[in-house]
Image 1: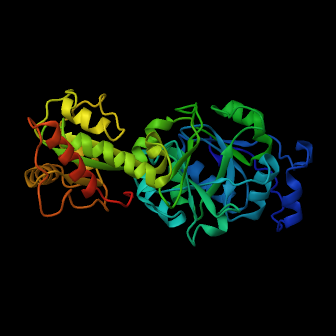
Image 2 (image 1 turned 135 degrees about the horizontal axis):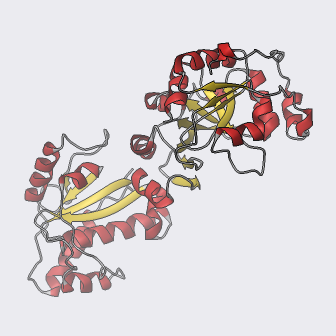
Image 3 (image 1 turned 45 degrees about the horizontal axis):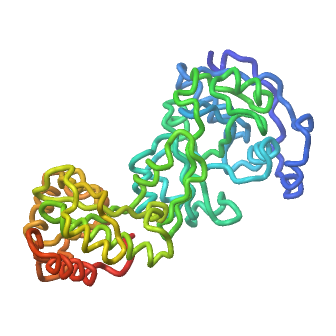
Length: 396
């Protein structure tokens, strides 16, 4: 059913909302809200007519009930004070996520970091809300702490509406406080339908889970504020800068380099090595001629144990093109390894990250000699040579 086929209801007055009105909103009972009666129902299948009606209502400062792939949302244009006031009266005066129409616009509103760019590339459009430091453009819509939540919806109707709208939308889940979010149109109408001018019916939400919310700090730290549609460990792994060490068999030099780097960089940050992913960093190693699944050599295990680092659980990994492309920082033990990395990157069109560094020798101008087959003294010298060559700055 299109908007033209439904009788129009009187519009609310769009007068300017005062600060005292907003401050008082969270304390007002629900029966103090200006209820509008049954919302007109629009069909997502009748896309053109429904989008046109939605755009008209949004421009007038109305709230709409809209489908997303996660849950149904209620909201309006972020630049309409009346719409923002109504949303705050429903949910309280708190930050709302800014919903925009294009992934390309994300970093116009929030400040980019390598970690946030990776998350946007991996998950947007989709069930992820990025919380970033606001840019100049985003500052008018930011929270008191200067951050802004940004969402790019994948659900087709809402995505098209956002692309055509002249301003971004503030949306919140279509439910009363302390209720579960609505995942179908009837639940949304039952919860908050009397506050919206229209509801768009697109059937049940595809994921039926709220978006995951991730705060990415300017220094690369990543905090998963809400784990819902996306899993925490997957988010941290996708966001992190990958520092990769490469040798031949991945049983001697590169496993030692990986472990020494992880320990040194964690110490620099004042954290335990296993917490590096929370700070936007993964450390790994691989071999250009490795057989997958082999343990580190006995001598490498002993040499590392002497400096308090256990690599007995290490298993070798083959250097593949996809791994090389994912890494932002690659250090090679020898020039032959660096040449192989460059060949693999050529096969896939280069690294995924725009700011990825050129693969480099760990010890500039020289190879770190393979200790395989040597005595424990040879392994100790190799260990110490690697430790001395490691970058002191934590990769970002």
